[in-house]
View 1 (tube, rainbow, N blue to C red):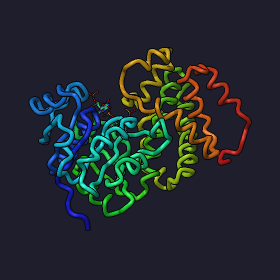
View 2 (view 1 turned 180 degrees about the vertical axis):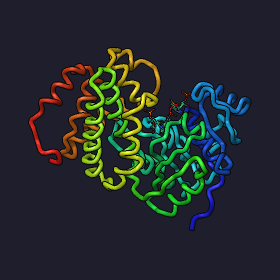
View 3 (view 1 turned 90 degrees about the vertical axis):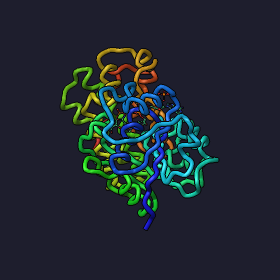
View 4 (view 1 turned 60 degrees about the horizontal axis):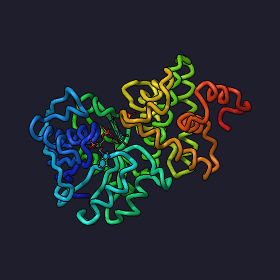
Length: 334
Ligand SMILES: NC(=O)C1=CN([C@@H]2O[C@H](COP(=O)(O)OP(=O)(O)OC[C@H]3O[C@@H](n4cnc5c(N)ncnc54)[C@H](OP(=O)(O)O)[C@@H]3O)[C@@H](O)[C@H]2O)C=CC1
Ligand SMILES: O=C(CO)COP(=O)(O)O
């Protein structure tokens, strides 16, 4: 049995980092959040809020913030890494000299490293081998979690007792983690649903109807299952919270930044306008790497390929739809 994880460092002062710091504080943990932005640190410490990322939310449980990364990590029992997926390698390197061997590092971003095609746990294994990698993913909007609305997620680590200890450290009456040992599966579900959420948003924005949205969600789940199992995911993980659960959430709600990105695209905003600034939509970065992984593993991913081609401005949405609808007919499960 692992000892209780009491001292939690949360790295990342955005919407999800702040919401997860609140989750851990509500569960009775001692929480220190690191943010690179000094005004975020000040706001959290002085106003118990993060108006830039969680406007209108006042914290109902206590935690502190700091701009000192080494100080946040030093002596902690577990780290929640909650910066964007593409920053995982630089963050892992930045804490490599401070982290105690064996400390669980929980990957909370949803993505795949674009430059290598590596899952984020493999990035950690590469540049932070002394850490114990874990993943937290599932249907959970930061705003809902921060407002204490009921949420369930999956927490995975290859050693079951680590997943159990992390779940126990974060659980409260409004936040229910389910433990898993399928680290790959939990990561893949969370990463791929963002690409499919962009597609669903575009379908809704273009006015193609609820039937198309449902078809896309179901066929998107098929893509997630085919690529996921090729990458080592267990099928029952993909039908769980971090796969189907998160896919359903983000493919149906404009509260999702990925869905909202697609919605704006479907309504006619040019890709280049959407790409310049705006809110983080991880699916933008995952689309191309998903397509590459599909090719590498001989898995056909028509929807992700269409999203990638639209984002690269190689085709427009109408052409993407036409090519998807006129593909050679096939058996549903082929
Ligand atoms: N928001 C949500 O509902 C959920 C988000 N997630 C995932 O969590 C991850 C983070 O998302 P979220 O918190 O919402 O994003 P936000 O855009 O709200 O915040 C991003 C945070 O990361 C910081 N940041 C960006 N780049 C770096 C860097 N190079 N080094 C250090 N810090 C950096 C930003 O700092 P600064 O303010 O200085 O720019 C900011 O504090 C994503 O992968 C997302 O998919 C998962 C579940 C739910
Ligand atoms: O992952 C999320 C909910 O589970 C958040 O989705 P977005 O990043 O699309 O807002």
